[in-house]
Picture 1 (tube, each protein chain N blue to C red):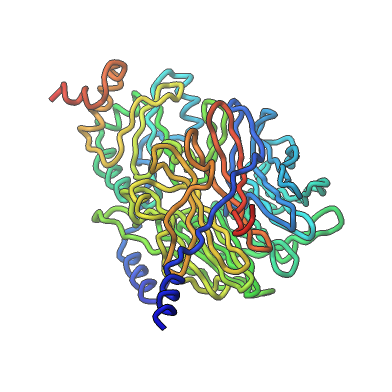
Picture 2 (picture 1 turned 45 degrees about the vertical axis):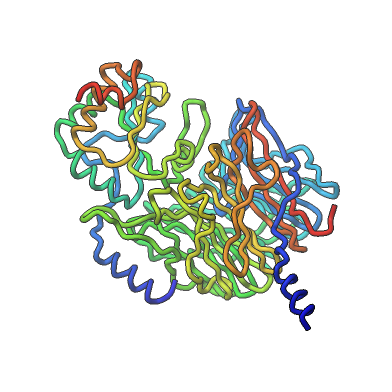
Length: 164
Length: 396
């Protein structure tokens, strides 16, 4: 890296606020293994949040969407909440018994842009995925899709179209 | 003189012999009811020493994840796998040559375990590191030792630790342990890679001190401590006002050659809409300085995320990178060779594409400059490891 680019990058870093992509504050997000264990016991679906350290849209969705008291109330009540870092080497255990890293699960699920939200059945079977920034209205609509059981009959797009 | 000009033109028009690989040989296989992983920091998963080839991996054929090795000598057929790890689950191995054999290391019970290995047997296990440690990577050094670099917990965070391993009877001795960089503060340093040349030792790692995962490097002349870190990868600042710290990069891999040149590859998300890309940088002074970032994969791979990049350098300086991506629907193994005009069009080795999922490539070179490409294939109820050898011009 030449000195000009190093200077430029350092300047950008100085200008960047120290806001990291972490699980939203005030939610009981847990590691994957723990979340799947809790789901097996409770029978509740899993809401899986794939973030990335330093991810801008993760910070934005945390600040603008997960700050909603309604989202917090609904998602805390209806789901086992799991947070995964798409670049992490933290090792998790899949329902099959296989040990892999969080980033390797991301590679298998083709999580190449963050955030990505996945809804899973209590046994870990995927229901659907919602990539990218989401609003409060989006997350509440997704919740209705899951909680009503509509996901067993139609796709998320069909569900949303029907409700327009 | 006209004929001379025509002949000269024809000579320059001759296609450069592109790197090709021979049909692969089976290293090992398990039923898909077991798990088999070909993953480790720096992707040092095969090594060549003279006529002997060593491959290491993790699988659960006996129930728990264990580290195994297989060796090929002479005819190139791999023998039965040897179990290297103990009874506890073990992960993320690395291998390199030492003396007439090899050294393998892995993570077990949150410690780094190492032993000398070879077709004839295994040495005693040596445990490195006093606290939680993981993500070991290895490189053979010109002085006959092995550079071992890993991530070790210090307080609340991981730091990169370097040491040398030397043969000591049927075991290994550790010497010259040092923290590569102690300035990260409240941030993790993870997934190191290492290369050793006549100029010294270079280590690359993932560093999170800047609020996103970035690739840092540090260089140590022979027998000296590591100098100050350098930021390796360019990145894009966040496009969203008030949020984020820019694009990330991860999983560096390093290789060096006899002249002291070093190449590094990594996954880079600066073009985040297409997912991770493979980027590379080159050094002509053993890793003290690196040149500009270079995009490795060709435009046909632009809209597909790349995963699991590895790199090898032949002793004469030829550089090859390999990775997997799904540009043709399912995961295939791809490679590219760096020429004077940059990185070549991407190719797949025989058997590296098609039905099933071909993933997790790793590369190595032997002392004569023949390149070897290893990968994992899952399909038809089996998981297999395949090893392909470079097709040498004029060879059958």
